[in-house]
Amino acid sequence: MKKEQAGGGWLLTYLGSRVLKSFLPGGEDEETSDDEDSGSEKDEEEEAEKDGEAREDAESGSLAPLLGCGKVDVGELAVEELAGAGRQRVEGLLQTLDKRLQPQAQALMKVLENPKVSDMLKENSMGAQKLKESLKNVAGLKSSCSDKKFQQAFEKFQAVLQQQQDTGKALAACVMRLADARFKAHTGYSSGELLGFLKISPKRMARDTRELEDIAKFLDKLQETVNKNNWDEVIDNFLCLYDMHQRLRGQRSRQVFSEIWKNEELRRSVGVGKAFQDVECRDMPPNFVLREVKNAVMVVKKNAVTWRQPLVSEMAAIELTKTRQANFFAFLISAISGFFMFVATFFSGLALDAVRADDMHVPLLSFFAQNSSAVHP
Image (cartoon, rainbow, N blue to C red; front, side):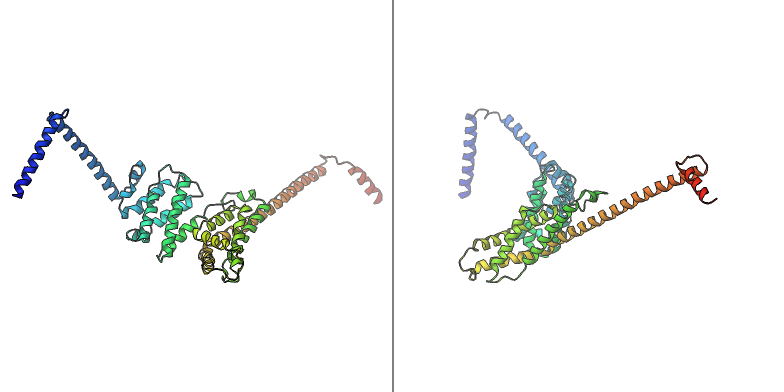
């Protein structure tokens, strides 16, 4: 009985639709509708074939043409393909980026080749999801993207990778590679130009060395043990370091300073400590304030090696520049002195030969000859 009712309901629905189509304009032209249906089916088949070709290209690993066309939805890429897509996109941008960003692009390519990153992308954790989103930003960069957009995508990926390392993931080598790449951009002391060291004045070298040494000293001070009696002094040291941005002129010192204060965790902890510096009883701070100051010191301790290494390298480059300048000017002075001695010796020899051959008259020479003969008859 139920089957008969279901069959009757279907029949009524079909007849009602046919009656309704007969009142609509163009509803009686069944051949036209059939042609349109067949045309739409062909379009769908062509689109399906194109999608199939795109999937085959992605599966075969040839992602460069897909990414180059600017129409690829990186959200549809498989997890296994995401790292490869990001690496190929960065490789395509490598030659168009500014020279100071090229070391970061090269380091990012190396990190994306690391199997640990690929293994983490396959996980279902919250951290893996964040890493996928940051990697999609990298893979989705356009071929004409600006240096600023690449820098933002790089920093976001680096921040997510740092968070995963803090949770216990074995990603220390990847994090260190990305952090070191930020300081591999050449400065005036490491440009590699043939006579580039002659463009740097001693005054500039002394100023840059002083700035680098000041930052290094603050990094040492900011690793001291924090307690209820000295927490405000530690915050004072942080604030003194922050105030250095008004007088920093060296390229490497400004890079390191910017890297230090880009750390959001450090900024938050120092901000909390600064807000409670004006309390009446400084020896009795709230416990959470003391925890925040200790956390700021812990951030410095964890990153001290990364921040100190470019400072030491730059100071070594400055000393090498001083040595090259001293050696060059010593060689120049000796060369000039040797040249004048050669010229003097050469012309004096010519003059002596000319006098001996009586081809050259030397004033007063006959007078001295006569006087000498008169004295010695």
